[in-house]
Length: 224
Image (cartoon, rainbow, N blue to C red):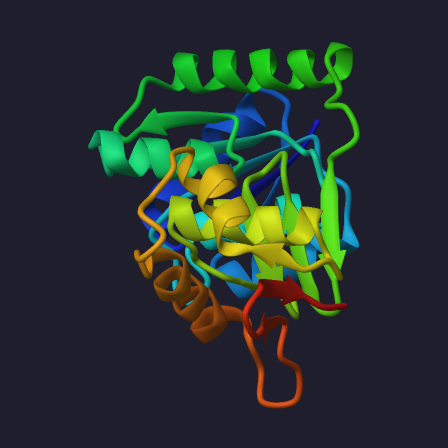
């Protein structure tokens, strides 16, 4: 079994590599997120073991980038960060499991075997992806990329972008947006739609390409 270990702490990487090799695994080490990204794109791995706190691209962002490439290699996060927020962030970004350091080596072996076994018999179905110019929204991973860079959106901004993408090249009214994104009937005098359109424009619009267009007296349109 070929394992990619992404870890910048030499003491920990030496310990993990020694233990895995003694159990018959083949291990390759990457000490930064950038190096790991290249190794993932150029080689096939049975499983990826990844720290969160890495130089350059951190583990959360790297996981999102790996999943964006439709790479379903199992990812097991090994991290000293024991709080719920970091665990949730790692799993939501596309990681399959999370093991807190320090850990018992037998548990690491057990989790590696469980993840690789699960992958063989339960391969993930094809992802649903929306494309618009250089913008990509992956529904399965709940991620947004622009020119392969992660775009961080709030849950409301994400839902608004998704609704506009579903109605790409169509004019949608403020009332339609309110009903679809907020789920309730707001006062017609509210400016919440305009405020969130502005938030979204600030994150995705480029100097040479404007995604969201205002249609005076009607609403908005997301254009290809």
